[in-house]
Length: 287
Figure: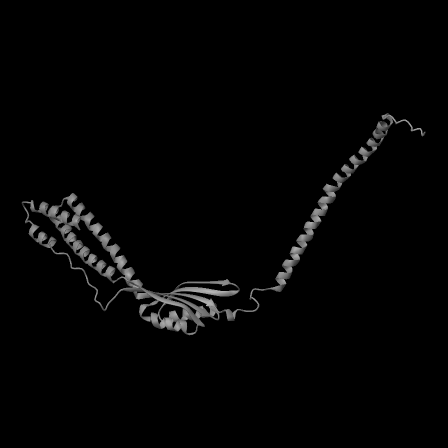
């Protein structure tokens, strides 16, 4: 805003120095002196609130109940943003994120919890963005007024001074203002969208009483085949050990036995020779 005002004042002074043309300074100065628009105030009866509901429901069958929840939300003008299903402890669980018109949030919650075994947890939170929405509206009003002044000034500069430097300076400021307007308008549109549609986060937990005695994924034939494959693998391992013993260990045993046999054969004559060299004690004569 300060940069735009300075640029306008500078260009007004430049326009006033043209001797052959009628100075537009008074009219432009009057337009540039337009006071800033007063901040918009949101009436007390109109609030901008982003509402989010979180539910944990205990149900008999998560998959079937998820289909009911989706049908309820779609029937009231909503849609599914995200779903997830997985199996835990042999039972199917599910979560879903749904978007529904804000006015239908309460009846939708009532319909969703109606057929559940019980409601484990439920909460509804709201984020009040009324102040931010009003502030954005005030900023947009001021920026659009500035944009209008800059457009008029750009036209005046082109018609009267025709100086490229002045035209470029006004154009740069006009582009910056337009970028700020687009950015703030995007935020305003996002707030409108978030307040118009509420969010429902649902988690479906299967009831323990509905847990099957036999898990749906249990297959005895497959288990028997797996056990047979493991048994064959063990036999293959034992066979491999036996083959190694025959091919590798048996020759080593034969070589070791040969060395032992030769050692005994050589040790026996040596031992006899050593005994002959040892002197024998004289015989004891009895008296």
